[in-house]
Length: 456
Ligand SMILES: Cc1ncc(COP(=O)(O)O)c(C=O)c1O
Image (cartoon, rainbow, N blue to C red; front, side, top):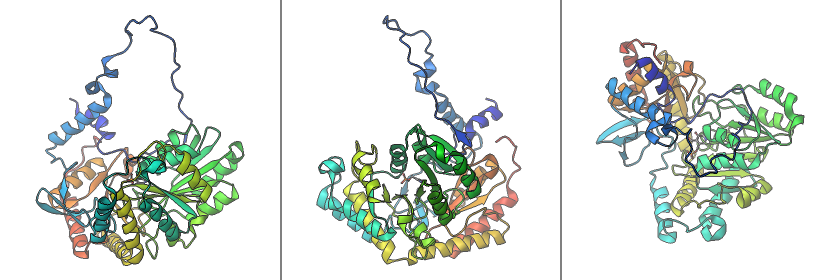
């Protein structure tokens, strides 16, 4: 197999495509017309095996190419490695302890005793599932208590707790926007939001990252041609670790009568004086944001998602939005109780977030002093170290893993081709020694890194 063509295919497959660079403007795709053929009952003649045999799907070829590439490079396979115990500043994989920068269990609440105990108690009280969707006897009091306490923490009117973060984000957007609406989204928005946009049939346009002038221009040009206009941004961008100017976005959305949705997956629990996300960081009330989405898999250390916002929004989502509550299971007692207890610990112990913030600042300061490029990261728990190209990023991550340091490369198409990087999730439990050691290993490896062959 030709290495160049293999690598071309590998480009789009090496890591989960949780982030995509996007075209600046997209119209909803058209679907092929349904024509009445084959009504005779004869088997169709124009269908190739690649349409119904999985092993011939191009996506499967991408996968086999990736495996081939790892083998050819003699890279140990470091994806899907099972760990034991918790995963925070360190993680235990196959009997070896790694310094861990691959987890977004930012506050180390996923293995925290009170959180685990609350979860165990909920299993004792309610079992491992609720038996049905929330509206039809799948409700337990923990669901509502979480919603009320999260509103108290964020200053929102109401909230809805749901089973998955990704699905809540996607289906909230998917439910609220229609073909007569417009979605304006930051070009670095997460895949869950992009998928939400795609299922709506709305016109959607990406604006350059954090570019408020470009956004305003789009609003000026298009606002009056659409009914609802949504602006989608994140509290902390999951690749770059930067924080958008939320107060300015609020000004714009008010001026143009649009709706602002903020994805707080990587900001809630991490940024702000109390670690309570963008509202805390900018000292604004949650009521200033129309739709505030939170993931429970990051700082909360568990699994699930929620939306917080005005009462009418939450009522609609609770009663009618498919995939938020309707037509789906409710959060398990264990997950809901873990989320609630994590929220309580988070609020009672803001020092967890502050420690994380100090660790991130230390990491950036030491990295920059060593001549490394931490790109736009500021005040958050996501710190990239930029790499010359994908080959180097991949090589570095494998060598770091061998050296007992766990971090993963972010390459095209997850990030633009010239913005490859290693991504470090900073944890409240990281020590300065761990950070110093990591940066020393990185600078040492960079000195002996092979020249890239320029193939991907
Ligand atoms: C910015 C962002 N939004 C949404 C999600 C989806 O959340 P979850 O992991 O809870 O499914 C992620 C997950 O990584 C994310 O990074």
